Image (cartoon, rainbow, N blue to C red; front, top):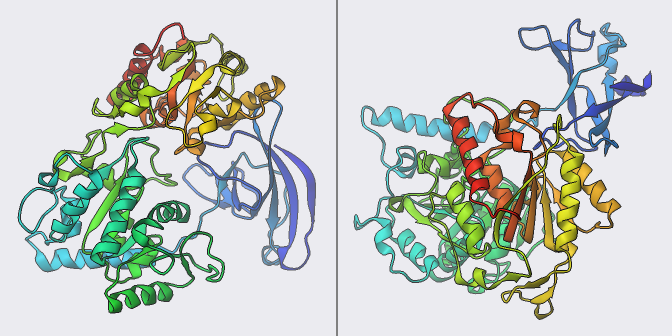
Length: 569
């Protein structure tokens, strides 16, 4: 931490400010970038501009904005931030100071949760009115983990006939009695493809009004892209609500809705005409909302219970799509027990895979070779996940499929490891140019070809290691190899994946070994691969005594992944 430019007049209401350079490690999942507002954390004695927070005398000032984020030569993050004291504070006697903060934290987002809270209070009123009985309805089926209720009383899985999964799910949804169906889709199983076909059929053939929600506008847009065009659905039947959107310039094959009233009008027009339609938006849109024949919760493995219930209040049915065994939702604060749990995780009830009584577990991966899929299936899916026959037809010259453990001895490394970066470069060098065959490749020119740099994906747990690996690859002339944290690569794939664990031992891990050995993060990293995955690690990483049963299970899962790998790879 150092001062780049001392306090100076910023003019007008902005008061005074100074420029600070903060060098350290941005925690994975944090979104510090140019323009981000930040809190500056201070240790006692506090400067005049900081307010005390907590019981140890530490404090915070909310007057900070990130101007630049870069990587230092040693792989650490360098953040330039402007700290300010407003004109009003100066008039009230707040003075400048020479103290330096010890940390930065993203500022509160200021999200308005009032619409969601209002709907949740409606559920509370339902409980009060029904007491001592439990209210009947969709929300209570979910909260009590009851199997979906159907009009004829038959379980949803009775609709399975071994045919097309999308057709089976459609039949189950048509049979529901104001309840839900869940679908768990592991990596490469075609969850979005299946779900979009279900939605298109219900809208086009049955005239349903369908809402689509997810954690982000981007996720909603991704699902709508998959829906658009299927069953003849065009921009007149598919729309997305995004506050302030320009209806004249849609950024996808849909109509843009700029206000909640626009979404209500869109749904109302189709209700009056008796035609089906699909509207995408976040939970806030549907919590305000209109009656729906179906609400689709995409990425339900990361979508927490509270917004799920708020969005589903006026939906006759809900379709959950997701996978709790992938990256969890980002949580910025501690919560009461179960509040932070995703809707789909809640329905799994502690199991790794969805019970047949509650819906569908998509058990066929079209991405991974059977040898790689077997390792992922044992790691995260109770050995229920299998490869499609087509995945076995790929071939990489001279390389066995599956997981390859690569041991690299290095002492004292925490968030970056030059030794592992060197090992990554050697792995890349030894694979480039090998013959790669993929009969399923859409582009005929890429079905049989030499393995290229864009066919290798490198995953690291920390931004510092990402920067270290990238510099090593660039120095070797491999600029086009993709490198990033697992958060960046969810949804992507490559014939060869290289995972750098980075830390020398459990004692060196800065955020606790539970982050590094988290089964979900390992699952996402390894399952990016189509043919093989290399796990580069220090042997000392597994030489520690876990402090809880949960940590013991995580360590055992990691050891099982390594022990089930292809030796000598």
